[in-house]
Image 1 (tube, rainbow, N blue to C red):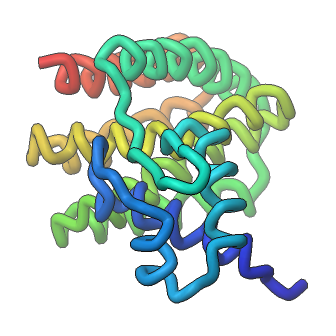
Image 2: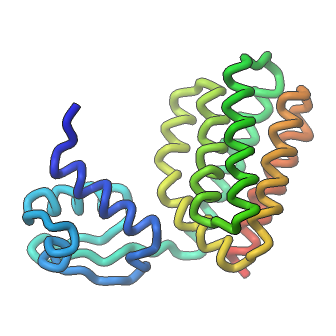
Length: 210
């Protein structure tokens, strides 16, 4: 299916925001965005309306956008939601059999995480990190949880980048946490897997707060 200009504008602006090329609080006029994206105002306005719905910008028609920021309390709320969802998911996954293609996906993902860790590639690691957590939800096959996780992904990506910037050692510890969580799930140890997920997320929350 051919990608429309509206979709291209949305994808590019979203990439710039999530990649922190547009920082929280930055103001961009529609004219500036037209020049940056080499597009007309119509697809850019459509993209801005979608981004506002996503909670990533505050958009004023005929003027421009402010890149949204999250308060510490809102970021903490995101982490609390993740703990509730992901501890449930890993408990359920620990109690069922795994297909080989599922195991292969996680092995590949963890290899990618290791590669990014060795190269100190925070952006690449954060993408693989987000995929790891979302894939756990997808393996659980609960549509409501998958949608909730997907809705959080963009917000959590920006928060994760901020956490890694505040603690440069976090990338390796996070990778090691993911390996342990995966091993505990596959070994069928639900309580330990849930505890590992909780510890993993609570640590990230503490770094963000302090």
